[in-house]
Image (tube, rainbow, N blue to C red):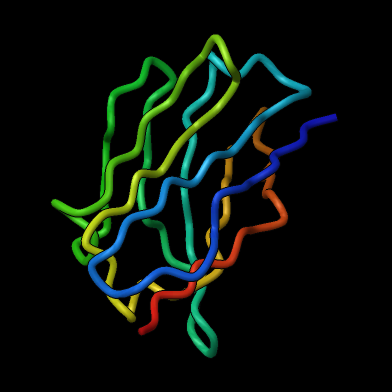
Amino acid sequence: QVQLVESGGGLVQPGGSLRLSCVASGFTFSYFFMRWYRQAPGKERELVALISNGGRPLNYADSVKGRFTISRDNAKNTVYLEMNSLKPEDTAVYYCNTIVHSADYWGQGTQVTVSS
């Protein structure tokens, strides 16, 4: 079955950096687009970044453009989110997502907290 496992979250000071990873299994990873979403307390889940199956970033949320970079390694079945110049408003649970044969799959999420 499809599984997505995120890691790399944590507590970081404003201006700091983190790299999130999402390891995928149960499907042919290189065939499918991958997404990172986030959900802050009391807010709706929002799309952060989208990458094509071939590794081309396709979309970033306006709030993260120029600070976050999505990438993938198809040999490792892994998608990454490099986050720089972090702000307190980036605090959220970050989720990895893919759509395989019209079914939506999510990881368990990883908490990112930006605070001094």
